[in-house]
Image (cartoon, rainbow, N blue to C red):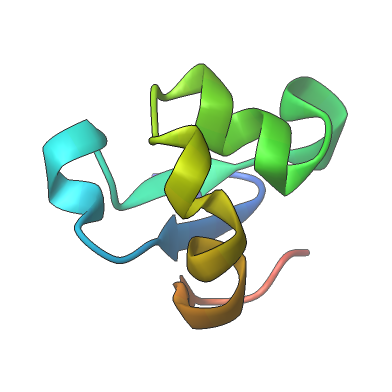
Length: 59
């Protein structure tokens, strides 16, 4: 089984928006763009960028 590319991220209360999910910079743009794509609240993005869990490492 192949390992997905990217990093697994989990912002605060992310379960409400389908997190944890894999962020792949080449496909999603900036991490802020990815949060917006997943409908994460705009007002909470700055907070999420400081306190999100990053699970694993990008290869």
